[in-house]
Structure formats: structure tokens, C-alpha cells
Image (cartoon, rainbow, N blue to C red):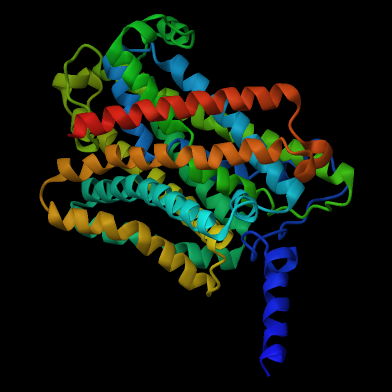
Length: 460
């Protein structure tokens, strides 16, 4: 009796862990988008366009806003070079993540779990879950504050409202993955248009702006500038985006037995990723330029979203362009950023939960659990510090510590796997890509360790 009971269990476990048909990343959308054969360049690119925009929102989420605007307010345009370098590193790592998913047919979480023990896999899940939680904190708080500014709704209510957007995601997934891509693209377009308009009104000094993209020696000699630079670099590459990128690159239907099909998928997915991350680079640059043009030399406090909202409507700070409309546009952009980021954050949570601990439960329950894990600490914190929004916004700073801790656990396996010929075959990293990736990884880890030490020191 026991032997007969054991056989099906062994077989089921084997199929679950090794057969891609039962272990696909984001199974309900994996390979759901058909790619036209022998189509022209633009038609093929259009088909592959979409995943990149979901990745890009992670690089322009509310957690990056304060750092970028503060960088401009304190040091004018000098830190634009830091944003440029950070964006180039992000492009390299995200292209590698997409290639990993396309070639292997598995996401980064699944491959990491396969090459580790059960205990290590569980530990990595906990660390990565903390990173997802940290990312969601910034997005939920940003959206909650935006709702408060736009509709005068108490922050705690705004946080609860934005937490319910997981229900929207459940509906969108039923409509198809292209609908999610289109909605997120629309929200990103709102962010881009708002800040382009506000920067245009602010009248930046174009010559100084362009010179800001060339690295300045002051960054290394000025301690305050160095610290803020590290904050920009350390907060730019999001660990959850690497897991997400390796998964949603598989939403296009690709014949992995056909070498040409793989090459086409890698080529156009990389183009999409780089184009959208260029968009994120532009948005982050606009944020810094806005901070420089409006607040440099004014001694204004711009460390909180509320400060920025109020400053844009105050003629004493930003001069003649001050207007309640600018303030409202800022809040609309903040809400768009928070909502687009929470959609991708929830998807990332599902990916790591399935990949690391093989949790088998209905998709709606899985997404609800992912959101509850992220929202609960924010709600508790908001209730405890009710009426003290400055304390709630401090969570944004603390959340970067979790992201910094989790980053090496995502980047190091990514470089190892994409450099492995056993996993990637002929599509393994070329020598220059591998060395550039290891260099970027070592730099990122070093910067994040420094940030962790400094943040904890400042907090204590």
C-alpha cells in the first residue's frame, strides 16, 4: 500500500520540478503572444515591444524621485552623469536577464532554486520577498500620498485604496498581457509628459545641463555629493526587475529549438528593453533637472513629496511659474508612477514565490497573498504614526536598505547563469559582456554596502 502510494508522489514531484509544461514562469501568459514570421523590422519590433516598459517603471518609481530631485536641488546638474552611468548598468543587466529567460525557458528565481538546496532556496526567497516588500513600500506610500494630495483623503485611507489595485491586476490578466503593457505604457506617458512640461516651464540652462552628463571630479571629493551619488546608483538597479525581466521576456512565443528564432527574440527583446530604459533615463534626468532649475540656491526643503507639491505652487520658491496646476500635475504623475510600479511589483512577487518555494495555490490567492505581505507593514506603520507623515515617508529611506541587501543575491546568480555555456549554449555572455557585468556587480555591491552602513549610522 505504501509503495503504491509513493509512486505517484514521486512522479508528480519529478514532473513539477523538471517539466517546463508544468513549471512555466507566469504560466497563464507564458508564450501567449504569437510573433509573426518573416515580418519586417518594425512589425516584429512592435510585437516584442511591451515587456521593456514594465521593466522601466521600476527605474522611475516613487523611491527614486526624492533622490533625483534632491540631487538637482543640492548640486544642480552635476549628478546627471551618475544617472547616465546607472542607466547603462541597468541596460546591461536587464538585457542579460531577458536573454536568460528566452534561452533557458526559465526565470532567474527558478534557475537559482534549481542550483541551490531547499534551505538556501527558502533563505533566498525570504531575502527577495523583503526586497519586493521594500519596493512596494515606496510605491504604496507614493500612491497614498498622491491620493491624499489630489482628493484630500487621509493618508491611511489612500494607502488602503492603492493596496486594492491587485484586484485590477487580476482583471487585466484575464484580458491578456498586452492590455497590461498598454496600460502601464499609458501611465508612463503621463509621467513623461508632466515632467517634460514642468521642466520646459522651469527654463533650465541647456549648456550646463548637457555638461552635467560628463563626470565631475567633485563627485569623489565632495562627501555629500558622493553620498547622494551612491544613493542614485544604489537605488537604480532593482533586484525584483531582474526576476521580472527574465520572466516576462517569455511572454512571446519562441521556438527554442530554432537557433534563428532565439536570435530574433533576443535581438528585439534587447532593443525593446534598451528603448524603454532610455525612457526611464530621460524621466530621471527630468526629475533632477526640475530640482536644479527650481530649487537650486533657494535653500528650500524638498525631502518629501508634500514639500515638492507645496513648492510647485509657491511663487516665493519657484517664481512666476508657480501654479496649483503644476502641483496637481505633480500629484497625478506620482499616482501614475505608484500604480504602474505596483502592478509590476505584484507580478514580481508571484514570480519569486513560484520560483523559490514552488507554492501551489490559485493565482488570485497567490497575488492577494503577495500584496498582503507587502502592504501589512506599511499599514501598521501608517496607523502607528497616524498624523505624522514625515515618519511614514522615512520608510522610503529604510526600504532602500532591504533593496541593497537583496541586490547581490539577484545580480551574482544572473551573471553566473548567463555566462554558463551549459545553460546558455552559444548564447552565453561574450568575454567583454561577462567582465563588464562582473565589474558592474562588484561596484554595485560595494556601493550598496556603503549605503547600508551610512543609512544605519544616520538612523541610529
